[in-house]
Length: 286
Image 1 (cartoon, rainbow, N blue to C red):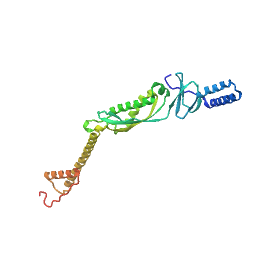
Image 2: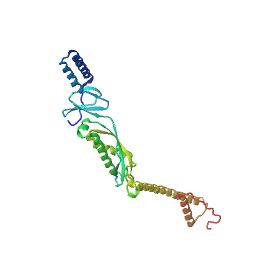
Image 3: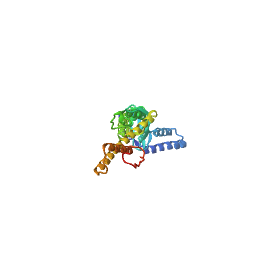
Image 4: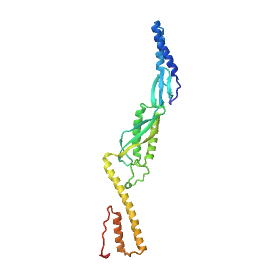
């Protein structure tokens, strides 16, 4: 037997009724008639009692007879099975696991702190009971291993100065990273009969020793990108201004004055502070 098999046990209410008749009847009979034979009824009642099992919703009982797997009861209700069966309770409910924050290296070798949130449940009680030593601990260990492997496959973020053109990063590609994590966990936990319902990154940040430096790096990248947009827009505005002045013949500018106007407009448009106007009461040359 290498896989789970269902078991249809007997109705527990019938056996409970028989147990009560034998148990109560033997006590009353012994008190009234003092017959030793009534002890057999009492013994039969004690044998029946261990066979009664109660299975709640989303629970199961794995049944063994002297080390031999007999089946799994997943139906809800009160049942009766062989009293000599060993009964192991396994919950089939969905469970949450929030892993500890691990320090791992991303694809670029940068240390990052990462944790995952896993939603899982037992699907195959045979594998969960007999193919691994402790399926709950198995989930914890394999989740940590999967997170470490995942972090090493992708960079934390893209930076232009590193010459990378990664489509998937840990920070920005949440859906893609979650799908990759789910697939990795499904492969690892299949041996334990575990179904992965959801897996996603719960915490992600640079490690403390480089967090400050990487924050400055991100800020510098953002500033450079913003300046690039500002300069690009300023050049277009200067070009439009010069073309409009020439087209409407408002003023005729030689190359020197054109260069001076371009310089002044670029300073005004690209500066990070408001410009202070200066009124020239003389000619353009004085």
